[in-house]
Amino acid sequence: MPPPRALTETGDPFLLTPGPLTTSRGVKAAMLHDWGSRDPGFIALNRAVLAALPAVVHAGTSHLAVPMQGSGTFAVEAMLTSFIPRAGKALLLVNGAYGERARRILEIAGRAHLVLATAEDTPPDAGALAAALAADPAITHVFAVHCETTSGILNPLAELAAVTAAAGRALLVDAMSAFGALPLDARTTRFQALAASSNKCLEGVPGLGFVLCERAALAAAAGNATTLSLDLADQARALEATGQYRFTPPTHVIAALHQALAEFAAEGGQEGRGARYRANCARLIEGMGALGFRPLLPAALQAPIIVTFHMPADPAFEFPRFYEALAARGFLIYPGKLTVAPSFRIGCIGRVGLAEMDAFLAAAAAVLGELGVRLAPARAA
Ligand SMILES: *Cc1c(COP(=O)(O)O)cnc(C)c1O
Image (tube, protein in one colour):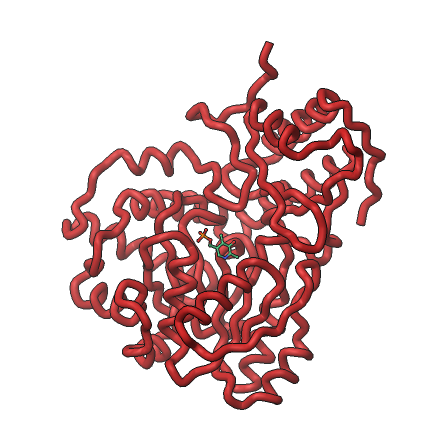
């Protein structure tokens, strides 16, 4: 007999991953229409989506949301190559794969850069950033990742922003996995631009990135871009002039994001969503600990987005079998991406709550039994 299988209301497994995520029925239903990209109805819907995004981080008066078709990386690449001028130089704070991806983007774009790296379980240090900025007056921009999804670590964005502003440099932020869930206030944490996407904590479907752009800096960014399609200044100019995208927009994705933003507001915005994810994360770490799994990060560094667990040493624990058996029970988890330690990851974001976390923990306990794995309960970090 197959094991009992948890399924979403549309009969799919739960995605305990960093995105794409489990979405609500309402978000999926919003895609049951075809929209003409030049139709006034779609233009109004798109305008409403773009108007709602800056407010999530209190940036309604300071920043403009410029959308970018594609996955989150398209938005990050658009941000880096649109804001860093040809004569500019970036300092990249790297403690995981997404910081490393930014380095690769600048390498390809031929933009001068240097890297200040820390280990994947270590946040960037504000003092080291201040020293690096003092030592190199050629640096124009600092790049930081808010939550480094590689490990799930919370980087100290407010501190890094304060140091960057004090040194008179501009901050560019990859907030992909944090936007909408972690607190951020643009009135006190200064950034020139910040990139995020439709399919993480906003609980939309994948296909649209966006960049919140300081208005004056966006105007000054004209002519910087290294590509036509990723030029944020040009994208913003066209949208402002006509309400239309330069190239085909993902109409269904934008309609779904419109619905996702309504559900986000109904949940109490960032505070409500953040509280649900924090509760999910605490339950997950507690329950996995009772089963004998140790998280990589101490509680103070753990963002409530995705949790990295050490791979257990028991030779009976084979990750592919663990993964497959959980999938058979209706839960998709995520392999590790760390270089510091063998690990795997479990997301606590998307349209899931404590009931799903408890069902997952029961499934994990059953799978350990099935595999004949016996772990000693882990002590709290
Ligand atoms: C998900 C994510 C991205 C974008 O990844 P895509 O696969 O291009 O959507 C970028 N940065 C961080 C920190 C992320 O978590």
